[in-house]
Amino acid sequence: MILILLGPPGAGKGTQAERLVARSGFRQISTGDMLRAEVARGTPIGREAKAIMDRGELVPDAMIVRLLGDRIAAESGHNVILDGFPRTVPQAEALDGMLSARGLRLAGVIVIEVDDAKLTERIVGRFTCATCGAGYHERFRPTRIPGVCDRCGGTEFIRRADDTAQTVTARLAAYHRQTAPLLPYYRRQGKLYPVDGMADIDAVAAAIDRVIEGLESAAGSPKCDRARLTHPEAGL
Ligand code: AP5
Image: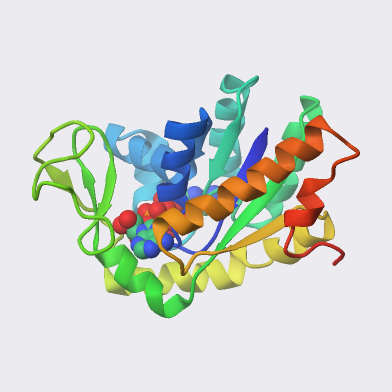
């Protein structure tokens, strides 16, 4: 099954993808993480991407499509969750082409909906374990023992260079201008599944699980179309 997690910066895409990997065996493909790895390695892509990411803008479509194409091929045969891709209509069209060339089909696009006003608070409070990458939030998802990673016991934490209040404004503007047009794009394909991202992390996870169960059930039994039953936009 191939799923997209869509939503504005700080909506909870990474948080929910991490849970799906841990609980349901999905492979996560995060274009943001892939770009940050290129930056850390100092590759030509990383050098070009860094300034763009620090400004809160999107990197060029051609760069990201090339990166993603190699990765999709490597994950072939697994359940995949795309986190942060596509982000523009040309990227979505490129994805459609990549999947159909491999005889694959996009199962659904889960949109995590959060009010803009909440997003800055979520992003500036975020931090990550420097050892294992587990994600936390000062207020909404603190470590169980202060200063110690729940997952690996690490005691060093990092914050992203683009997690500042100014950059968040630019990232939100990019979302509304370049990524929001994907909503009508996927709605027309009948693949859009909005979930309420204002709820707490566990409630959002439960809503996503219900969408996935509906999709699995629909794929396994054409007569029992639970995806339509759980589809908040059924009939649109
Ligand atoms: P990327 O890394 O994809 O960042 P983003 O989309 O801005 O999303 P974030 O990672 O900031 O947020 P998230 O939705 O994953 O939220 P999280 O789960 O961490 O991209 C970074 C940059 O790379 C882009 O700006 C662009 O330059 C470039 N880029 C990447 N992909 C690209 C592409 N396809 N094309 C072009 N350029 C691309 O949650 C945030 C915090 O809130 C966490 O601390 C979490 O604990 C907390 N939280 C999560 N859910 C909840 C909840 N329900 N309630 C309370 N707190 C919550």
